[in-house]
Amino acid sequence: MARRWRGGPVAACAVDLPPRERSIRGSVNRSIANVDTTLRYSATVSAGNRQPTGTVEVLESGKVIATGELVVGDKGKLRILLPQLVRGIHLLSARYEGAQLILPSATRGVSPVLIW
Image (tube, rainbow, N blue to C red; front, side):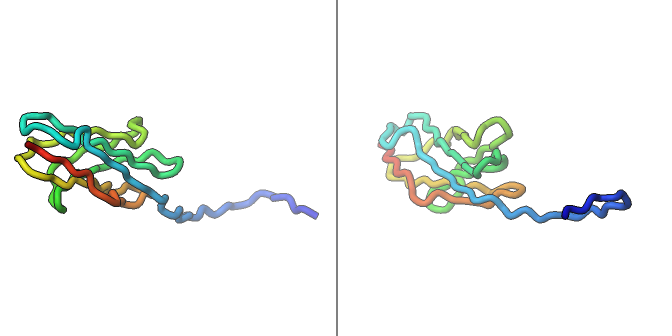
């Protein structure tokens, strides 16, 4: 038999929500380019049904070369203008710093770019 609530004080309690799984994917718009070409890095952060916000960094060999901000409404997608790269091979990756209830994440591989 179900009991009915008969009134009286109700205590509020805090509930810790677990952080949401996350992933980031990224790619550069060209894999071979002239030194004068403007390059963009596209990143997509997914976190289940939550909209990720916060900083995405583009790295070359572990060094941050560009950053961008995800805001509500971006649906986790961001295009970051890259600085001019010198001639040679560049191995680019991305890192998402995380946000409230969304864990940080980094791309699993690199996007190689050959600048001539």
